[in-house]
Image (tube, rainbow, N blue to C red; front, side):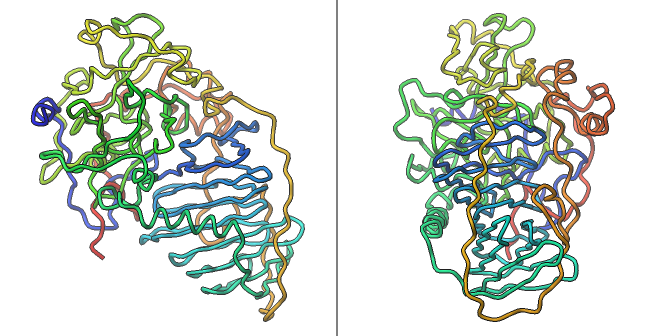
Length: 546
C-alpha cells in the first residue's frame, strides 16, 4: 500500500532545494506574499480582531492567520498567543496590539496599551523585531525574553529578562541589557529612567509555561522549529517512520469520517485570498505546511524537510469546480494534496516563490526544478477520492463546512475536474474571518506597574509617538500602508471571482484610482515570471550550518 501511494503520487513535478547559501533569497519578485505569518495559537476570554484596512471588528478565532495591519484587543481576563516563526508574542488583558508589519525579514508591533511579552527564540541574520509604544521605539537586538507594559496616561515600562534591546527616537540611543528595566515617560520629550526589574506575576508564569512547551517539543526533530504549531503535535498525535516517505504524524482521537480540510471553514485574507481555518486546536501546522497521505486506513501528515526554512501557504489543496463540474451547480469542492504533488497558488506569485513554497513543503533530495505540467488537470492526484464538497453559499460566506456538506458519489469523483481556483467572490463575512462584524470592544485601560527608581539615566528626548501612528519606527524603513478595506475591493473582486487583487490593483485603490484589469498572464499554474532577485532574507532554503 505504501509503495502504491508513492507510485500514484505525481512524479512529473520535481522541486529543487537549489543549494544556495544562507542569506540569498529564493524569491524577491515584487508583490510576492510573505513566507512568514502569525498564527493565533491561543485565546482565553473575549478577543476582538480588526482585519487590516477595516474599521469594524470581529471575534478572533483559533488558528486564524494574522498578518500585516491586523489589530487585536483582549478584554478583561483575556489572553492571546501569537506564534511567528522564531518568535512568540503574548498579550495580557486589556491590551491593544497591531501587527504593523510582518514579512520574512521584519516583525513590527504597535502597542497602544496593556502588556505584552515577546520571546525571540532565534534572530536570523537580516531579521529585526521592533515595538512601537506611545513613548518610544524598541528594537530587540538579541534572542531573549522581553516584556512591555504601556499605560497611555502613565508611560511605558520595558523589562529585559534575557537579551538586550535598544530604546530609540529623536536623540535617544539607550541600550537595555539582560536583567534591567526602564520606565519611559512623556511624549514630546521622553524621560528614560532605570528602575528595578519587576518580579514575576501570573502573566509572566503563563508565558514561561508556553515557552516551555515550544522549547521542549518532541516534534521539532521532524518539523522545522520555525513552523508555527509544531508543539501541538506532541499532545494530539503520534509519529511513525514510513519507508520511502519518511516521518509521518497521525492525529489521534479524530471523529469518524474525518478528512483533512473538512472540519473548518474558508476565510478571505489578503494577499492570499481563500485561506483555510481548521477547527482542531492542533490544526495550523498540518494545514499550511507539508502534505497529507492516506496510509492504510489512516490519514497521516507528511512534513516538509526539517532543514529548510518553512514557507506558509493558505491551504495545500487542489480545487474542483467551474464549468462542467459533475457534482452540480452552486457547489465548491477540494481535496488535500498528497506527497510530492505540486502546489500552484491562486494568488499573485513569481517563479522564485513557486519553487520556494514547494521546496519548503515537499520532502525531496538531489533533484532539479522541473515543471512540465501545463495545466493542473494533467496531474494524477493521489487524494482525489478524499474530496469535500460544500454549497457555494457556505464557502463564500466563510461558514463551517460541516453545515453545508454536499455528498459526492463515487461516479462523480471519477469525473472530477480540477480547477486553478474557486470561481467564487467572498462576502464581507468571509473577509472578517467567517465570524462577521461585531460591536467594537470597550477599551479598558490597565495601568502599568510602578517601580522605585534605582538609577536615573540621562534623559533622552524622544519624538512623540501615539498608537494612532504606529508606523513611526526610527530604526528601519516605515512599514507599508494598511490594506484597502474590503468594501473598496469588492467590485474588482467580483470581476475576477476567486482571485485576490494584484499588487498594482491594490495600489490603485489605495490611491483612489480604479483597480484596473487583472493580468491573466501572471496566474496560469504552469507559468513563472522569471528568476528571483537577491534579497537579505531567505525562505524555503536550507538553514545555515552556523
